[in-house]
Length: 163
Image 1 (cartoon, rainbow, N blue to C red):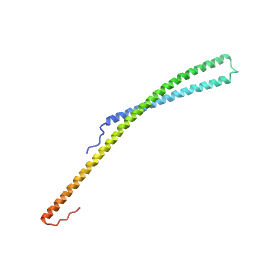
Image 2: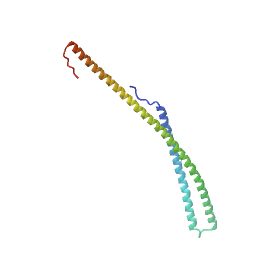
Image 3: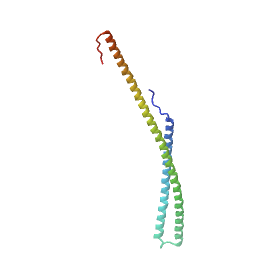
Image 4: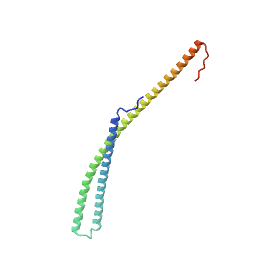
């Protein structure tokens, strides 16, 4: 019997490549999200540090320096708001990449299950074919044996058959 070949092997190979590319895209999006979250955390910690510094030195600093602190705090607040928007966009991109990866993985698994099922059918048919050949061989052997016994009876000779 011929070797097993999956009829959709090229499609399965393509789906595996697509899944691999989607894994890379998801990894990149996740890395970008992590970087953007780190930037946001840095801005927030800088604002906290600056607020603490301003509040602890409020009695010892001039009005000009206090205005500078407040201006810088407002700048940090706007940076934080802007960075939060960037993080939200990046989260959406990451979520879309994750959904795409899940979909491509499902498609690949479906084809792998189909391949497994086809392989099982192929192995079943191969086993049936082997059983058929074995049955034919046994049937042929027993028919020869019976022919020899019938021939021996007609001749009225004693025949010993080895098994």
